[in-house]
Image (cartoon, rainbow, N blue to C red; front, top):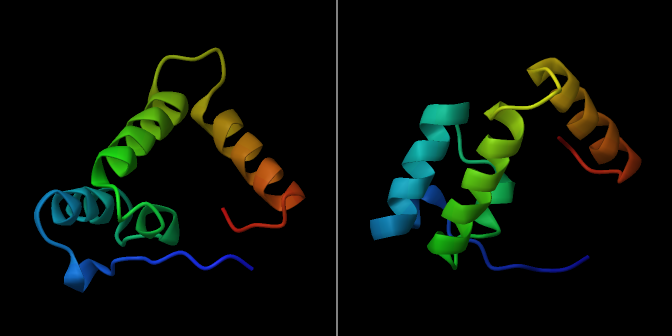
Length: 81
């Protein structure tokens, strides 16, 4: 298994702290998918913008269908969603 340095929310400052605060407002906590990007806050922000566009932006799929696709792909890849 790979090891990736992650900055925990209590250690975050500046731009990273702001991104973590957005994550808490969105989901109630900071998930590991955000923490693994913690060394590069601009990449974390861009990743979240892409996620929000894909999951909440205009689409021919409903939100439920998008969530189901994410769940099935994560299950197939043996990872948590």
